[in-house]
Amino acid sequence: MATVTLGGNPVKTSGELPKVGSKAPDFKLVNKDLGVVSLSDFAGKRLVLNIFPSVDTSTCASSVRNFNAKASELQNTTVLCISRDLPFAQKRFCGAEGLENVVNLSDFKDGSFGKDYGLEISDSALAGLHSRVVIVVDENGNVIHTEQVGEIANEPNYESALAVL
Image 1 (cartoon, rainbow, N blue to C red):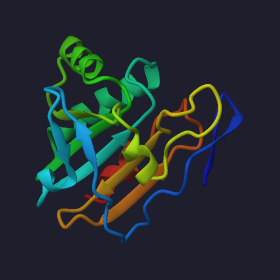
Image 2 (image 1 turned 180 degrees about the horizontal axis):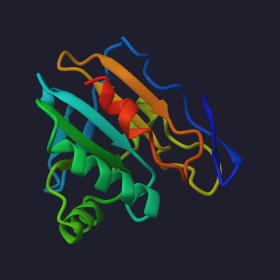
Image 3 (image 1 turned 90 degrees about the vertical axis):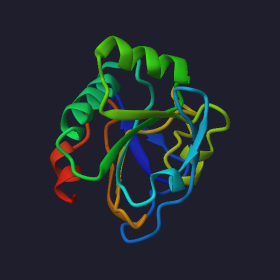
């Protein structure tokens, strides 16, 4: 279990992030067309998992915009923006913002992604949502970078995440 903060107040998560060097856990997430996708759908690609509580908050929206801008410059890399938002909200946000370089995926059905990756918020007003995390996975499915943002309201360290690619 990790502890981060929300407005300076301690917030616990459901576990620990996958360790650098380990295989990324498989997942089943829902895309904008309500189809189910898994880690194997991205086999052979490098992945940046931009994980956050909700696209309807300013910091989360900013992280999606920033990774969208950087994604077009990355070779053999897909940026997955993952939250518990409904796919309709994710699609609406990206459509309104004109964001086409990221893939939004939802963990709305059962929250298993948040639990399996150890990043589900387990207490506070945000219980059940994802904490702010960036995980980078290489083309072989190995975790090569993790960042659990200490204060949920802060943005991740984009440069650190992208430097490992």
